[in-house]
Image (cartoon, rainbow over all chains, first blue to last red; front, side):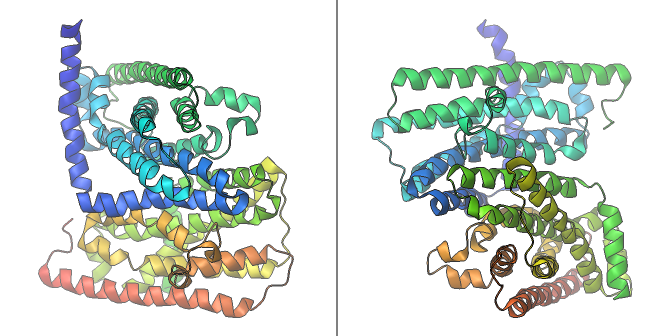
Length: 268
Length: 255
């Protein structure tokens, strides 16, 4: 079993090296900290201020938790855009021909986003949150951090599935993650409880990892039992794995179709 | 003026169906839904105009930033930047014509946000001061294009300035009070906010949707136009300096 996993892990590791090289080309630690992080913290503050104005400090606390976790979702969804870079770089045909599974390559290829997103969310939750009334008990901090990691990872898997769909529609590479993030922001319990919306929207939101993991994070801050927090987190993780499997099927099908039709290099 | 209009028309044709325009047109109504859900959940139905004004201004600024970033980059990628600069037409007029055209598409988001508020939440906002709203939107298009033009020279010097393009969205929305009026920001921030055209545009647009009489509308419009013109003057001066420099060094086409 371990031997069977060794090869994919090797592919993911090498692919991730490319991902972090891309990250270093885009950001220095200064531009990440004062540029990107500052922008994301401003976004959290933007929504929290609205909550403060319309509903007072209590809803502001609700908003800061939702929007702080949302930052890692937004970053993780960048995988949709960065996966299409392979086509632009002309390397998609090589990936299609290589014996390494495309899913493992793409899984590692954009890992910089969930890592960076996790950092952003942690800063937003633990440094910005207290300014808006969020308090953390010391024993909750590692659990909250783990929930952030799971949210970034689960969203990344969901993003990989979307990336497989968008690979053949490169012009939408920035539109799809932007719209998806806004839909999640609206309907997954980030700004208002899911119960505010009609029940059918809640049922759709259940297939998004963020819904369950954010629920677990809120339950943690409200001192719910650890069993309940664990159950919601496990559900979120399970949904993330489901999207990874879907992404695998979508990548395999896309490249298989491309090889048969000779269209791997073309954006139809 | 003819050159300005020709540049704007060219840009509109070039932009039709572009991902940036599509993105803004799709996200504006969704932002309205997000903002209205927060205020509706809190029982503050009186704040509906906020949810229409904010996505409109956000779209205008986002498109202006996009235009400032892509204009030079695209010309450079196509290998037409040298030709554009060597042509006798004034580059500043061409740049502003094209930037205003891109930014003007953001006005569509006002109609979309208004429709989203009506269709999803049943909040059909009235237009008690239509002239003020239209004039404010037009002045804001100019101000957004003028202010964002300050960034254009940066893209000639360093293509990595895209990071700056990504960074200047939410901090600017916050500072400009597009959603929550500047008066709710800390006192020390407010003077800075008043130097940002968005704060004047947001206040005037919100007042334009409020049944109460709008005070000093002409003066406030003049401030928006003046801030935009100041940005435009700075942007074009910087662009001229940067272009002179890269022409002297022979690095114009280098990305």
